[in-house]
Amino acid sequence: MNIILLSGGSGKRLWPLSNDIRSKQFIKIFKTQTEEYESMVQRVYRQIIKADPSATVTIATSKAQVSSIHNQLGEKAGISVEPCRRDTFPAIALATAYLHDVRKVSEDEAVIVCPVDPYVEDDYFTALKELGAQAAKGQANLVLMGIEPTYPSEKYGYIIPADSHKVSPVSTFKEKPDVRTAEAYIRQGALWNGGVFAYKLNYVLDKARELIGFADYQSLFDRYETLEKISFDYAVVEKEPAIQVMRFAGQWKDLGTWNTLTEAMEESSIGKAMMDEDCQNVHVINELDVPVLAMGLQDVVISASPEGILVSDKGQSSYIKPFVDKIDQQIMFADKSWGSFRVLDVETESMTIKVTLNAGHRMNYHSHKNRDEVWHVISGKGRAVVDGLNQEIEAGHVISMKAGCRHTVIAETELKLIEVQLGKDINVHDKEKFSLG
Image 1: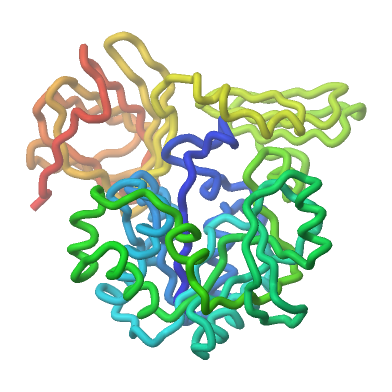
Image 2: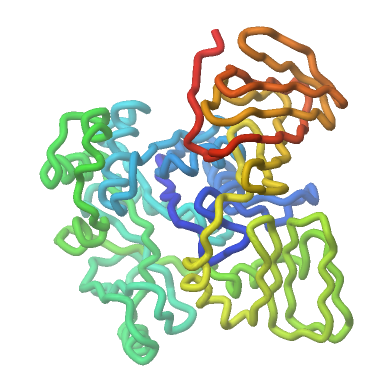
């Protein structure tokens, strides 16, 4: 299979566990057979490889998410980086060109596009293989997956097939309706449009050349910021006459809100949490190193992270976004390709951060114009490079770096340090990268 996973989202509906860097698909809440936790993107990638070990997986995403993808998947998946957000048609066109020009996938091969974050079981990936095989037949230019609805949802658009066969021509599309209209659609045999579809690679390449005009992947990447923001549905799907839909009746959940996310959790709490016997349908996810105690609550979600603390009725949690939009603060934690960081304290002219580097990884070799830094190593072993000079480091060592000094740290084992930034203008843009040589 050639699969493009669309990875977007600002993460605001799952605040405070998500932010502009760590969207919902990177939150680790699903327990594995080894009693560890994995995220949506890790779970979906694992399921794809289980279904097809030779699958070519490409994640279409923004620059802000690349570090999180590398942190959780390593170098396993290909990444088509969008220079900026331009909605799904440009993103899919860029990823398709990436498959053809960078990963050398033939124009005659089928490509499957799906979101990175559905909660599904193995039968979904069997269906994806069938979807790709149907597209490869060439009977239609696009083959959509139509999900058998389990309730009259207002969150999805609807596909109305021409007949009741498993694979059918599409009669018409319907926009996201109200509940009463959705009920009427379902009586007509309508299916949810979950944004899952397949095509031969040359179809989207030709369509993108027609609508956008470009020579190859690099030329499309270079002018990406000039492209019109438009969805794949509006630009292509709704105008395509040769289109089919394949039914899927298995489990398919969009875990886009706290209410739906907690429904998929196997346990009532993650992290340090206690509940009394009067709590009913209460879920706690705590990423702080302090306990959370819940007493006498019903239908409530509690979530705590360095970004903040949420205590909400599960039904009301779906309406969180306007409130989160009013919160104006810097990113307090993030996964990086080399590890992670968490802000511990912010003052007018200082910031204190806990940094964790994974074994065998390092930061970029860089400098700052407007701030000094001090590293206090608290565990692990590694090597610091300061203006070209190497120094072995371990717990208890302190490294000081003045503004303008070039520096990096390389982890031999997992390495944890406290970084203190000192200066009158501390910001994420004050960074210049260099080659380590």
